[in-house]
Structures are given as C-alpha cells and as structure tokens.
Image (cartoon, rainbow, N blue to C red; front, side, top):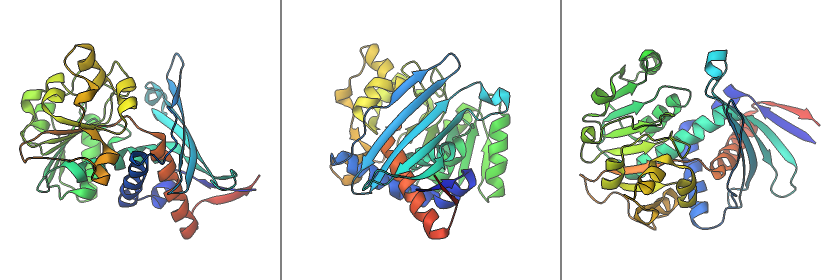
Length: 323
C-alpha cells in the first residue's frame, strides 16, 4: 500500500486559496443538500490544550478523511505552533489510506477559504477596506481569502501587542498589499469587511464602530466561553453559520447572547451551504450588516484534503512511501 505524504509547503503549493474556496463551495453545498456524513467532532481536553478528532465523507467530491488537530495556546512560548495536526485521506471506494497531509497548513487554508466564500457571498462588491483582528497563525490565510474575492485597497491589522500585526503587515507589503498595523478602533471604523481570528473571551471591537453595510467573519472564539463580537452586533446583523447545531453547541458568539436571553438559534439567517446553493437570500440591502460565524467542520478538511491530493498527484508533489 502506497501513501503520499505532503508537508506544509507542499500542502500550500497544492492548495492555493482560489482552489480552496472552490472546494469549500462544493463541501458546504453537499452538506446543505444532506449528502455529507460529518459526525460532531470529538474533543479531548488536557491540562495544556485541546485535541479534536474530525471525520467526514463527501460522496460527490469523493472525499473521505479524518483530521486530528490540537490547539495548545502556550506552544508559541515553547517555539512551537499553537495549532498542529494531520489529515489522513482515505480512498472512499476501498477504505485504503491514500495520503497523510500536514494539518496545520490545511486547517489554516480551509478556515480562510470558508471566510473567503462567505465574503464572496455576503460582502458588498465595492468593498475596499479590510480590518483583520488577530495576527496569529491563521491570520495570513484569512487575509489571503478576502484578497482573493474582493479588490481590497487597504488592510488594517490588529493584535494585542502590535508586534505581530506589524510583522504580518510587512509580510503582506512584500506581496504588494497595502497593509498596516492599527488599533482596533482605527481598523474597524469605516471598514467594509472585518475578520476576527482570536481566542478572546470578550468582544474585540465595539458595536458602535461597525459601519452600516459591513460584513464580518467571526473565525476565532471556538469555545462556549470565548467571544469576539459584541452581543449588540449579533442582534442587529443577519448571522450565517457553517452548521446550526455546531454553532449552538460551541460558538461563544452565539451562545453568550442566548444565555443572556437576548437571542435564539431561530434568529440565525441560515447556513453557508444554503447560501451557496441559493436556498436562502444573502445580503438584502447595502446598509445591512452580515456576519459569518465559523466553527469549523470536518467536511472542510475532507474537501480540502481531496482537492490538495488531486493537485499534488498531478504536479508530482510530496513523496510516496510503501507501508
């Protein structure tokens, strides 16, 4: 049995952002049509972090995979990435393992691609100013996703210390992007698109600073006790999620307003898959605020792995080992 192994750089070469966004469009569409098998992810918490086990099968995309990803917030202090993992892709016809892909890069790309898809479907076409709150390991791909679907003139980046925001701004500048570090208020005021990718337990921007017509991607706050958006913003926006059950179970941005008696899942506008299929309306006016709350689903990993493996085989990327 042969197994193809793709490291971080090979995953990135095999899965450029436009390809990843297209794969997410297919994955969420299959999910909305009821074709996907995607059990709720298994979460195991240790004293230092959390490991998640995420299997999924997409019959139309011929994608069968299992991801194991670990989130250990103190890892950067040890010189290690906060998010590590791997994805094993299986042949859906035989069940044989086909490939082992580095999971950190795949996770960052597919998470960014979901925001890119949501931005493409919900942000105003004329959007030009992008505020990115959070400059950690997933921030670069979040920026790439928005840049892939909108003609952005200015990227404003926020981080707690400012140092990582400046570093990311310089990286984007080297790629020809007009990017700069900013405070949260400077970044959000007047922004057309806002992406938050943090582990904050409290809102990272003020509701009063969100301009009419803004689109917001809430990517961090991956536990019940985390929160990136003020409840007031959730209440006055049309909120879309990747999966209603997952959001109700894990997304602090949704759960906290519900706990306070201010909101219910019945008020959610729908899912990204329904939106991609045209089953529900997206933006209804230029002044409306739209939100995509991402939890992260195994179907994304399966679709991304299948697409990356296909491109890797075509380009001869990675190396094959005999088991």
